[in-house]
Length: 108
View 1 (cartoon, rainbow, N blue to C red):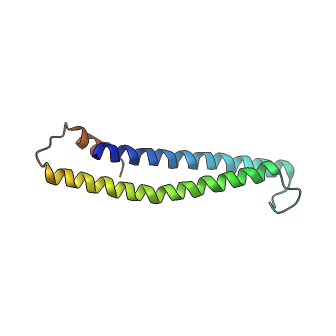
View 2 (view 1 turned 180 degrees about the horizontal axis):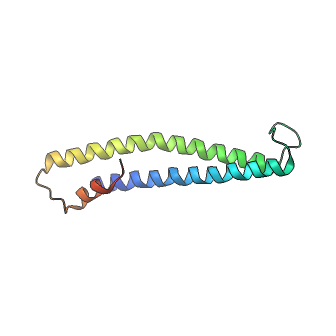
View 3 (view 1 turned 180 degrees about the vertical axis):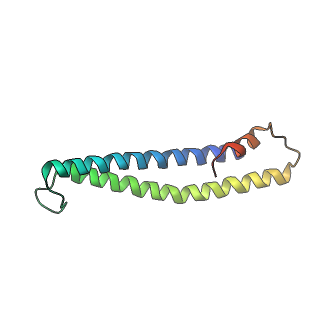
């Protein structure tokens, strides 16, 4: 259970990083498109449809990343609680145990 919770935490961190990376790429593309067209006001009727769509996608990715950060906080707490419970129930567990290895290598 501890290892499963640890994997869940790592997967969520990976997803957040990927969402933020793609959002940064989109920000650069939006800036390049606005520079190319000379129109930066997204409410201008001549504003680039590509830039508009990229903005929507970027904003959705950033919202998803923020939502995942909330879920990540809960997942980390669950992981910590499960690990503490495991230590309480099995204080004799060795460092070679897979569950203990997962605890040592997860970023917190």
